[in-house]
Length: 484
Image (tube, rainbow, N blue to C red; front, side, top):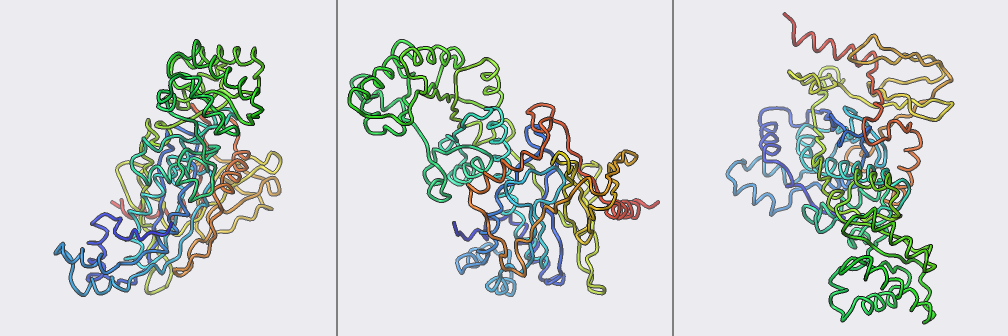
């Protein structure tokens, strides 16, 4: 969906740009990394999503006449700078972790190599896109994982924080495994399944519940899920649903996908009772769908209670990631190109908090897999020009507790570079997969994670190590800045 989001930025990005324009070399090439520091919800990893929208952002990055007129009206910007903006476009290189890849804290999600003014401008919108979709995709994964193979439908549009959050949150949820969404616009934009039942108002608008059910079943025999809790779930709703299914049989209307939806009450108790009633009536293939403020913890509890539910509609807690509403991605300067040598000079941000100290330089990520199991061993952040020869032994070490080391024998492991080139000199060189393709890819990716890393609580931590060259450079910069 092509949109010009150039002014979707914090003011200080533009004031810094003007400062670079007058006080520095505006063509000075720099590297910025977008990354995050903590997995949301205490998960064992995060799910990468949003790259397609970052591509749209950069492809449409330009200042229209109205944009420049508005900036002029603020009184902050000089005419020479505004004239420069009239011909502005993105000319840099971008590398990124592809969507539907699981990832870990401190790994560069997106790396921008560009003139400093261009790299600075894109920070806010890039983070807005990545932070949102990665957050919702990760939350959706947790809910889908809790459902243990049952279908999870994304039902959150009316509770999302605005149209974009609803549209792109649903997109992220499908990538992470939801079988469909109630959001029709998301269905149209991204060719994903749209799903739904009906509201209580449908029942209430008819003279009685049975008439409402029959009318709906005749209209939608291929998607007939009846909401049974408008009046009394077990004494009215389920019996009337069964009567409706019987009536459709009499009329020769075959219901190919049918069942009931529970939206209130004790879902474990009601589902078991409803299941028995349906089975006794001969409708053993009727689905029981549940909704009503579900999240991964409630779904997991209902599964433990042997609730007779095999389809889940999840809204508010998914689309808002209610218990962890922000992803925390940041965008930090990692290197500046030297005019003298033409090489990138690593830069580091220091902090009193160790976790906020950045990894310097032009970097990439290698993922190590065990040849025997196909499972991930660890990730390695290293300089972009480092090459890992998996036919040779390699020593991984913890970048904090450096005495912790693992020697991998050549031939027992293989590596994959995670980051791919997305833009080259301002031109997109990457074709985004469809959302359905991304969902398939994510399911395949999950097979390379151990179950212990996928569990919802206290997951096993996958190690993210630094190469010796990167670790040495980081220590050298720390020593220089803290020299006594």
